[in-house]
Image 1: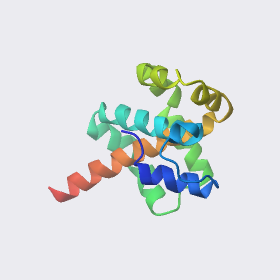
Image 2: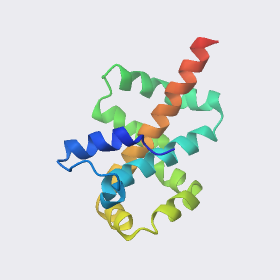
Image 3: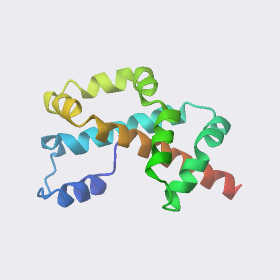
Length: 134
């Protein structure tokens, strides 16, 4: 699932771009959105209990705004984005057909990785919300 259009527009506005319906002219939001999609897809394919045991603590730090840079690095290590990218290579390859997105990936890979983390955190939030409502 890509970021909602209004989220992309907010990012574009923050970066000084005018609102335009063709966001493919802006490869960075597409790159972040791609990471988000891959993070969500990967997390959705995992065992819920395993996800919670591995990432719920990071999610709680994240939502309470106490996720330090050291803990954030630990999250990246635990998440192992390289293995996620390998598992989700079909989705990634489809997006990299666009030369602007491929060029953005080379220069701004960290934004793609952040998108993966945001996708994971979104999935963790949904799992926690479901567990609390049952």
